[in-house]
Amino acid sequence: MQGLNQDVLVLNSDYEPINICNMRRAIGLIYLGKVDVLHSDSITVHSATTALVSPSVVRLKYHIRRPMPRLRLSRRSIFARDGYTCQYCGHTGKDLTIDHVIPRRLGGRTDWENLVCCCRKCNTKKGDKSLQQVGFALARLPRRPKWIPFVSLTKFVDGRQNKVWRDYLPHFGHFGETAKPD
Ligand SMILES: [Zn+2]
Image (tube, rainbow, N blue to C red; front, side, top):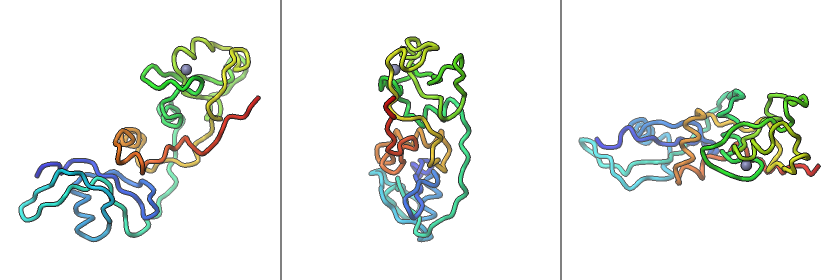
């Protein structure tokens, strides 16, 4: 019974990611005819009587209504919104922090519109100066995300590491917004 605890991405009928479940549950959904398999991994799950190619992404045949989830403002949610990318220089990596675009000293607030993901280098350079003072420009205007993943933020961020899943997990910070020129 190899791989039965492997994660499977479940999409709503409109392709919105709605859940991440284990293989056992996914196979149950397939067996009940509730989902279509969109992607399978090459490993095969053996049970007593059947051999199934293990599903990786499944899509519900019927639409499930779900409540609008709430996303708490936190370092993690800002990082996730900004794709773990410095909004000033485009650096991606582990040495990231949070920057107040308008420094607190100048009345900048701690909210979705004034916090961005920022690398330590840019953070040090910027200090408590304004964007104009240091000649920085934002990659995109920080906003409260309009679309919030229904799956947990941790699972969502981890899921984006999966090459197959990534296509089905929209970047919830990206809404085609571009930074306004000053
Ligand atoms: Zn940077």
